[in-house]
Length: 98
Image (cartoon, rainbow, N blue to C red):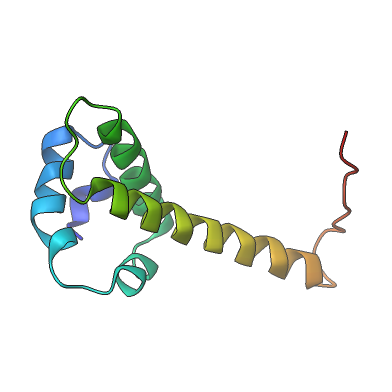
């Protein structure tokens, strides 16, 4: 991933450049995204989400959006789980539905 990925909102041109370049190469999506810092991953997710709402999104955009959101979900679950089992951390309680 380029270093400037975390700088401001991602433009369509920037996203298409990523999709045409490093994202559509033969890479392991999970391994690639696991190495991306949180801020860059969030920016990529936002850029992909906005791009998918255009009349003709680039090939592969939906696949990468699903992969990015899955990585974000796993990171969120990992941090929530570690806080819930950490005795020194805050007490985590379940809120009833409804």
